[in-house]
Image: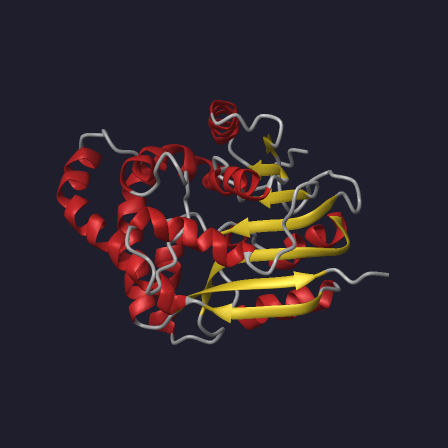
Length: 287
């Protein structure tokens, strides 16, 4: 189901215009990831950190052949394909971007996953799927784009089967009441990525409880993504002079330019403790 809302257009424009940035400087042919990496004592490479983040979200979930997963805000389906290859699950990925739908399905076919992975155009807050049609709802750095996170949570709860599980990895604000200066910095960074606002981890967990989820487990993982945040900022600093010239010459678009600016601002937000990162797991009760 494709629902047009006012906040959709900038999100689509951002991801379609900045795909080349992610492809060249962040993702890789194995992960196709648009999310942060998870670094611990076993992590040696950037590509490994991207897969490690998938593993952190997957660990408590009952992933096994025969179950059906909704990848909400899937990008080009990097995590969808990792889930299918690793656990043999069927995955439906939802994205607002028509270009990501085409790219994602092409990659899935190339990897021999056409029977397990399907990327579709749709809004994860209004999917159009039948009640209780998924075993797991999965999302990585995508729920942050929902103006009202409870809309996403209500829809996730609706489409999950009784006993179904939710796994979300996302950026979060550290507290609701920031100083005016810190609030301005946070929104300057979020604006660069077409994000209206982010919840605190506690607010998101409370929202999950409010819509009916139970066994809610929320943990802050900011210490494990700092290296990713610093890497993004370092690449942006190196790219800034070339980006500025290219933008003036109209070789880089508005969102490409914003992407470089946002990369530097998000690092400041993490360093100042304005922004954090978290993973939230929850379960729909068995009636």
